[in-house]
Image (cartoon, rainbow, N blue to C red; front, side):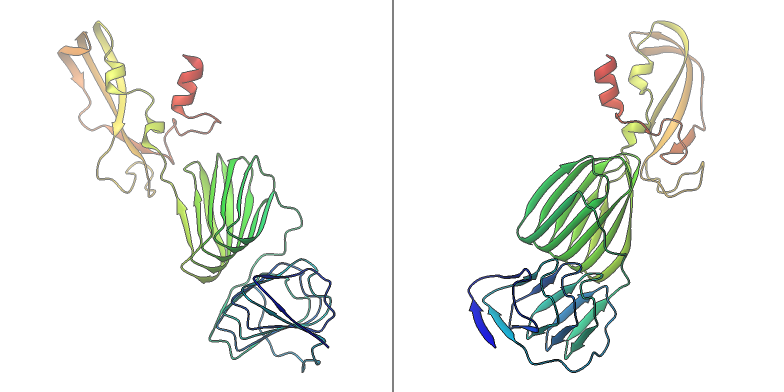
Length: 311
């Protein structure tokens, strides 16, 4: 039998003789397919998992016992057999982490939710403590494991999955016309998405996790402002839009909306941008939102970017 204490974090990468016991770590983070046998958790505080919790057979005597000074990270293929974790704080167990059963004896709380199948290919993968990463034009998605990661992914143009395992992560996603599917295993994590993306939490095994969606910019629905429309001389009929105030629901399509504009019409004699004489004007302007407006942005450039390029 081997017994060893490790100062700082412990990383299990497949070199230890199973069965393996990790004793008294602060927190434990597992990756998918990290344990080929059973995973037993004894007297831990919180368990966050996508796997079903069930009783497993009596464990064999440990051949390797490791005591880390801080956290333990179980890598892909990290334990070729059974793993027992004793006396940990939080333990994070994503989908397919253990090929065998998952048992949690004496856990203070277990937070479980059905999760997706393990992804095979990802654009961004981070693991550990206080990691940072940036990427652009992803095809598949993001997987973060550990604590306090800062990840930024830009120019998302196709549907992606975001897997967040651990705590205190901040993931920012920006792009256009794509869906972002979020899966949480842990606590106190935030995924922020830009206004031109749709996003949803597909699974949440934990608490105090947040998906923050930026509101659609009302400026993108304005094809022409009043000041732009009145830059003329003589008698003209003009059309312009301006933001509608104190509206949460679109009266045109009935959808809850971030951005609602009023479409105004005016016929007048203009001089230096001022209507000297008004012949006709709309008194009940039509209203439209990001769901029903023909000016909703569905291109790669926003209104200001298009103007900058086109002049």
